[in-house]
Image (cartoon, rainbow, N blue to C red):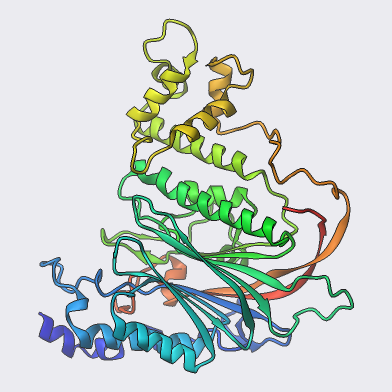
Length: 458
């Protein structure tokens, strides 16, 4: 089997299906009709791609232990081809996931080839020596890197994230107002795969940590007026809790914006997982500084309530049955805090390793217990069922602003276009002759725009 695989002419080209595709290159833009035209205004392109680490790529479905990492010719040829395409596209920003940081030869190949083409590269392994990690490359002709931070979640999935603070080399917007920050915050990450629905809370934790870190970094560096891009393999579709959480925080999916898809449209895919299922999980999220967003704690609580409701419905409980389940053996028509915690434990949403912490359960309880009398009546239970919270402002909230009402010009991005490769995935089809990865490559093109924002300080 392996000998025939090595001699397969498709493997020699690694990805024959992509030979008919024309990606972004420099300032080339594909119009909606499928034709390409040059872009006159300055643009920024961003590519995110889970390149499938050789330690995870199975070569024999009959023997799951046969991995590509055992065959140098295989993984080297495939990754050389990946770099060929990355350099051909020459995106301003490249975010890779499942980068095989444990193999020095592969690491050097990427760093040398990208470096020789004008990129600064930053790699970050997952914790506990998992073998793979992240690589982010920034083209020096477009951006200078002002700061680089690493986020180690130290959680059940050993996941990590990278934060890069970059500044445009040549100002996108010529203006007499030098105070306009032409800087961007970029995050590259790869969330935990949802092996079980109870792990949804872990994935939500991971995004919450990223957004908390972003919020702190923006406040400490006075960067409230800069756009943010979140790139990576989110291991969840538009139907998931993470998607809804990010939307509630003002982020938009660049691919969906480019193709005028709504949150309920599910027309594209970007991944065929190890179970053989195809789904759309790779995103380049954009949040411009003029977005009005809820306090982060409120969005987190609503997302957590959504997961609780999902687990209750998974147990075949309707609204009334769910209330009875939460109040357990309580004779009164109310839920106590002890009942609430016991129910979350039964729903597998609390554990020492990866579930809701004691403080998080307490925070959720405070959000639900509107009158503060220590129990939840049926109306207060509905706050959990319908995933709503009071948008009261804590003393340490970032929404209080002495400059509220004052507008200021800021810099942001408009999504010009976004393309998935191979092209078949844009129609929800996974091509059998695609071997470059088990993920599609997503590239988005952005143009700078002027925005009027309320002057706020995070």
